[in-house]
Length: 263
Image (cartoon, rainbow, N blue to C red; front, side, top):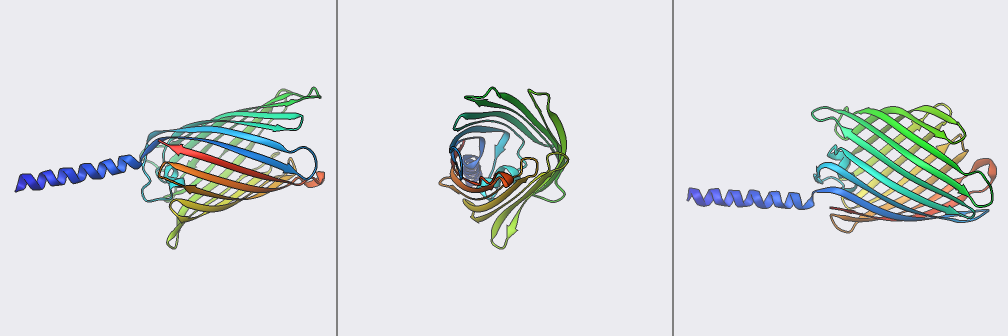
């Protein structure tokens, strides 16, 4: 009888562990496409590719699937590329980043670097721009990250600069549902800030809104988005943006779709 009880317990534990591992993932890859529609001038298209590798398997922990990695404090490395084409100009971007949640502590460090290339068909103004950022953060309570750092740039014409940054991210419950709240700012010459919020109808489906403003380029954009996991591993998302270019009097709309898969 004792042997039967022990065997039953082992089988139950093994089944439970297998179910947990079935929902875990260590890679996420994605692709997206976008369209830019300005009031004046040429329209444009955009294509994105990206991937993230997590150092340890990520469990959903009954959290929104879109925020599972953050809730798990999952350290990772990522890379991506963006290809934009608008009329007689092209802009390509290649970037990589790392996030590291220090084990057995509430500290976080992150960094990123990207190479941007700008090419114009009829004008000799081709330019390469390198951007980078580093930050250090702390999680004073579960699922709340506050991080400070710097971001900088350097181009082919010896223009460069470095500005301080500050951001926060918080995933929490709102009644029976979850919300994700984000805010960030850069100071100095750049003077930009962003806000974002996502409301999770359930752990697989979210609706969100975001806002971005950059005083240096006199550009701002408001967007609405949605993301749906059609399975534990695969999600589809879309976004519509409404941009304001300030003095140039050339507002624009953006439309984007993307798909991601975890394994």
